[in-house]
Length: 502
Image (cartoon, rainbow, N blue to C red; front, side):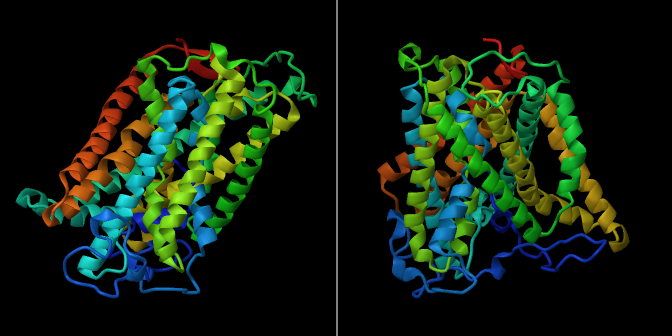
């Protein structure tokens, strides 16, 4: 997800031309959009109307193809690496130990490794195709939706060329679904963790080494916690200033980093004998693993904006590979250690398995604090796509009222969807299968075929792209089906959290 993305990055990705770039005034809505014209991105020193940049279809553009170097308002390689890590690390990470249970202690890590390699390959495809169209049309920046639109315009099919604009619209739709899906996940995550903290509050101790069973105090249903959180999340969504959101994002990242350090130091201790854990789980549950894993790896939306903002874009390929290697190692290590530590009792979020002592209760609250403010960051992107066109239909006098009402409605929709699916593992798997698989696996390989087919592609390259897209499509269909079937399965309640009754 995969999901703690910076507000500025996502807005760039989804920005559309023709939206006025004005600062917000009191009582009116900010329609400021981070348009591609606002960024001086890469451009060719040898631009031609057609054809590929140096490096062609074989990889990233040659370093000499970049003209812009060392701009003072660009990001350094270190800042870009941090943004890339934050764009891929979120609630999906905490759900990976349970995902490993659905795949097996051997098959799970191997699958995560393969998915990490394929995910970064698809990211590199997207960057490469964006380079191609920047060369071809002499543009400074091409976003995800624009790359797909130009790709369809490059195909031999007259029908696809005629309907190329739908490529941008479809990508925009899936990006909106992904971001709002993240928001639904946050509601469920917050409710589950807060409910567990409140249930164990009376018996919470300072002894974190004790294995005694804590009697949980009966408390209200997690769905009532979601409703209780709704007014606070609505107020948070009213924040429309990117600078303010950046502050909240920084606080959220610090909180989650501290929480992860504490979680790691706990799960590496007292690991039981893993011989009773299955090497390969039942194939019926593997699609649930796929949905959760692709949810975690879905950071493709930040790739192009990150490269666009760099002082030296030539460094981005190395940063992408280094950053995604770190992400993959983090995913595999936490999922393996978490599953080894808790075994079959692993829950939808590893935070729910932590002891009921004040240190780990504080970790749950700290991570919940980070996720709460991350909601505003994720919500900014779909809000800036959906709301401005609707506000433009009313007079300026009523614009701010319509703006706030639409924000209340969008937040309420995410809350209602979370209430309808109050199981964190199923929400993550469903969002990953429905939207993340399309953006991360299905679209990029097809984009490469559309972009370079008329220039001539090796049959093996075409076969590789078709295979990746086909795997993504199968995961999309089967993962969505299994998540819906699992959703219909009665759930038991363990430690205040809904889990499968299998």
